[in-house]
Image (tube, rainbow, N blue to C red; front, side, top):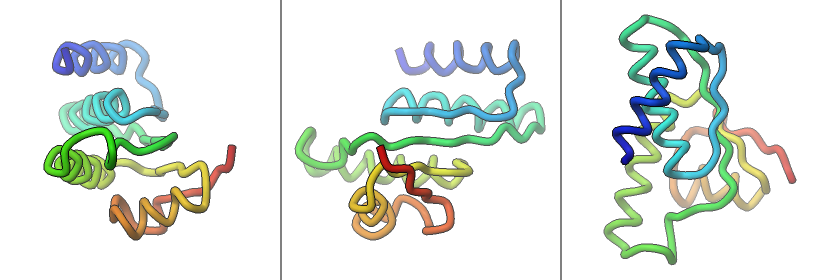
Length: 112
């Protein structure tokens, strides 16, 4: 299902040709950001990516190994994400410190 979703998003990118893609949630956010990454590489474009965290699936939902895998995946895709939005000071601190998702300059605080 994820591969189909990425292909659909890729086709939407081809059709719309956006300048910015703003994503939310872990799984959908990854799929869209990965599609943009592929699109930018293939077509030598520079679609900017903004991702908003509304919570984490890094703890308490899955096994420790699976949670660590999700952190690694998020660290990888964050390299290609222009701006990461945190909705609280605590979340921002955890993204930078506890999980080391991205450097401070990429993470912006926009409270609810």
